[in-house]
Image (cartoon, rainbow, N blue to C red):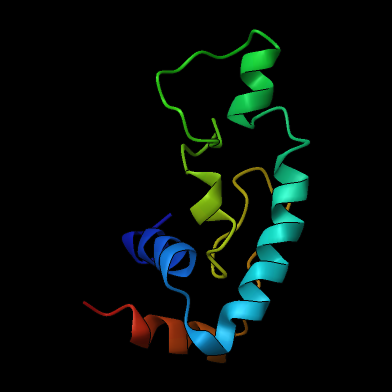
Length: 101
């Protein structure tokens, strides 16, 4: 995962572009359903006694990402391939242009 993708995920979580709001929420909801049933979800791994952390956020123990932001990054994919990126090359270019700092 790149810094660009981390920025994209948090931007989409905190202040998503208006034209992408609906798509982001739809994709995030579908992804969170998958993540909430995954053994690498920090909540599930903790309940199974396989993981312990001082972090309070729901996160992926494979990649370390906070799921609230990771699932909203349209150019991101699951580290164990349970879901993929949701952008076309054209959309990726727009996202790249918007995330230039």
